[in-house]
Structure formats: structure tokens, C-alpha cells
Length: 109
Length: 114
Image (tube, rainbow over all chains, first blue to last red; front, side, top):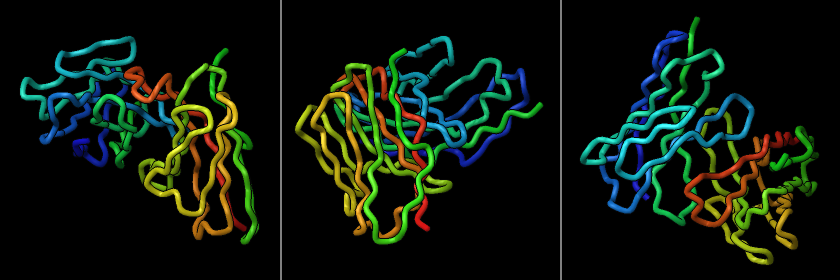
């Protein structure tokens, strides 16, 4: 599975959109992009995933560039409860999830 | 409510002792996984099981053992051979080995060697 690169940490004002970037320049055509988040001392929570098209659900939006070498997770109206570590993961269907260090998102009032 | 339950939440072990962490799910998921997390780091895969009575080593299996006698249960034993067992342990399950709709995680067990 392709490796991903994420910033170590980001800050966001409460009520504003949080845009979390992820680079996956070696992604191959059959690899999906997944996002999970982990609130302190809890298990990770699935957020969203996509292959080529942009995706949206009740939690977030996932924007994947046309060349698929990078993506952005968007939390449209961040709240204090969105403070967490966000993991961007690329994997082929059927492979295990491999978690990197992720991005620490701090939402501030 | 369906979910995945890990117990205990906190566990203390003396050096040289084996200890078993429990993981139970009622989601009817076929696949189950054990991860280890050290402070400030991501999750590392210890063992995984795709069906009953079958399991495979992950990236850091040394010093650990598992069993999968029932679909619902995937206990992890931390043996005395694991040199640095203090960590946060997370169990997860998924519908099958692919499961594009992701893994469901338990709330974790924090193991401390005293």
C-alpha cells in the first residue's frame, strides 16, 4: 500500500471549516483513500473513504485531486469535540489498515 | 446495540507474568484485529484473524499470542517474552477482510507493567 504524508498538527477556530491535507503521490489505481480519527484514549473512528470521486457524508467531505496524488478531508463546521488525531490511510481492497502518526487537529474557541 | 467490547479498561501486570486481554464483538463480523499504540505514535498491527480457527501474524507479533475459537471472540495474550508490553491495546473488527466501510474499534485496554 502507498505511503501517506500528513502535517504533524493543525489548529482550527471553532465553527470554521477544518481542511486536513494528505499526500499520497505513489498511490496506484486500485488503492482507496480512508480517513479515521482518534479522540484521546479511545479507539479510532471511521470517517469516510473514496477512490476517485469526491465523497460526502454526515461527518465530512473528502476531496481527491484528479491525479489522485493528494486529498483533503473537510470538516465543514469544526467543534471542540472534533479535536483529535486524524489518520489518512491508503490501501488496496482486502489489505489491512496501516496507521501512520496522523495529524493532531486542535479546535480552539 | 451492536459493538465491540474490550476488557478490562486498565490492567496492571508484574514482570514475568502472562496476561490476557479480552475482545468480544456482536456485529457478526468475520475479521478481527489487534493493534498496539505507544504514546504519540500510530497503531501497529499485532495479529489478525479473517475466520474462526485461523489467524496471521501482523508486524509486531513477537511476545504475543491469540486464539479464535469463536467468531465473537479474539483474546490476546501478552506473554513474558514481550519485553516492553506497557502500551494501549486496541481490538477491531470488520465485516470481512476487505470491508470498505471500515473497521469498528473497541475502547482499548491500557496495560502497564509494574
